[in-house]
Amino acid sequence: MLGLLAWLPATAQRPAAPAARYWVTFRDKGGQTLQPATYFDAAAQARRRRQHLPAFDSTDLPVRPDYLGRVRTLTDSVTLVSRWFNAVACLASPAQAAQLRRLPGVRRVEAWPVHPLLAAHRPSAAGPLPVRLPAPLTPADLALARRQTAALGAAEFRRAGQQGQGLRIAVFDVGFRGTDTHPAFAHLYRRQAIAATYDFLRRAPDVYRGGTHGTEVLSCLAGQLPDSTFLGLAPAAEFLLARTEQQGRERYAEEEAWLAAAEWADRHGADIINSSLGYTDRRYFPEQMDGRTSLVARAAAMAVRKGMLVVNAAGNAGDDPNWRSIGTPADADSVLTVGGLDPDTFLHLDFSSYGPAAGGRLKPNLAAFGVAVTAVPGGFERAEGTSFASPLVAGFAACAWQQQRDLPVMALFDRLQQAGQLYPYFDYAHGYGLPQAAAFRAVGPPPALPAPTFDFVVADSVVSVFIRPEAATVPTYTLPLLAATAPQTALGAVGPAAGAPAAATAPAAPLYWQLRDATGFIVRYEVLEVSQRAVLRVPLRQLPSGGTLRVHFRGYTASFEAP
Image (tube, rainbow, N blue to C red; front, top):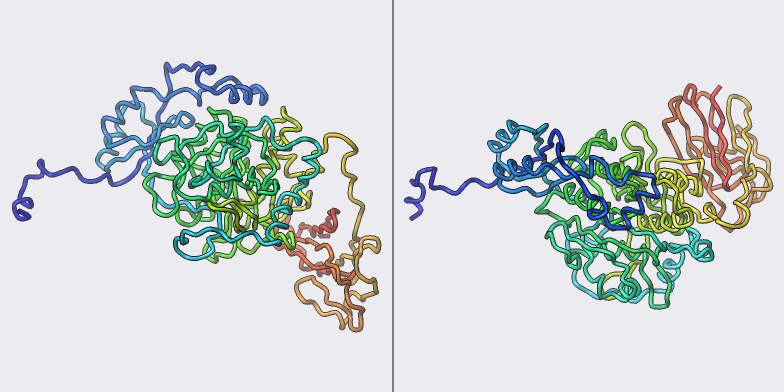
């Protein structure tokens, strides 16, 4: 039989499997119309009014049916139709793609390779985890559960009655298995706060299968412990749950699903999109992290233009020697990118991906705890990853926006950055740091401006940083700038003088410093433990020409300009 089949004529053989996925962009939307009152959810219409956006624009109009019909006829299947980009994704052979390029109305046909997307979480072991019930939370875990929101100013928001009321948050993730039955989310289902759900892989409303990563992420927005402690800052918000990804090898192009979910979230009235996902070296090069190359970055930027705040995890490649930097869509300028902090030190976690984005652009923008207590099937557990820092900040943004509901999305973006604990200082590990609710205080006096905590002193061709006595938490003593008894332990860091008294046992606030070149690019940055008043010295010859030494300590930031 096998020999006979081998001799069958080619016309009797089954067609070859599609060789690739293609992205087909059209030239126009001539003749298309839209009734916004019937197409958009009432929440979407209200968002556009608040953001002073038109009821609809050309990017909301449908793709021309005749263009779409011709593509369907020539290809094996159409997997996505995008109004925003006037384009479709389809499965086709190279020969079919050549035919597509000759169709009237087609502007461009691009091959679209399929690669896995990486969830921004840290698995505790290689390979799939065994099915098990999580261990009970320890006292340390319970303390962390409270601190992960308290560090952001949860009490301040709570006193102001700001817990995300009136906001609608879309969560894009790999699955929400167990969310609908977990006690942590019972309060959401009691008040019907899950406004809509959709699985963009199976093309069905049920998102409660697949992975549990989305369940964990949602818990950092609105999960609740049995003792009523909330794990996130927005338990009173409404939610849109979109399954856009599948861990491991995938049947659908992930960027397509992200775009489809963004258009769906726009239509269903999302104010905020939380995305704890990102592409890195499986598809792109670092120089392509420019916010314009990837489809998903362009989709995120379009979502912002529609009035939605996009919050994305920085990623967990910080300790990966093959990448280290943020992925996409975290690279887009208008995406609020969130790095991970160690809950014990409030400093950058080694695995949290670094900035900058291509071209030296600031990334990440903010940071929050990258170790958090999350809800998992059967209970709760401690988890690691910038996946959980991102929803903590998304919940913060919901509370802030609730207080100033008519604030334009990019004005909110700027205010969120200004709320960072380090602002106006930033670096490529912490961004502007951990946002603080006090920056959005609705009543009472605004936070006081920080008093100077250090001074620059220039002597013998060296610029030194001296902590002011009133800001010091260590015994004060005189240290000669170039004393032989004060060896440099690192570039610019000063070691303790011989015979100096021991530092106080209480940990001191760290000092952040950086060198910038004349263009503003940070060429070096460090965080130092302050163990004495003379904490930093930098030879003037090591300052970049036309550059700046910038220092932050205890809320105060100042710069020394290179001569």
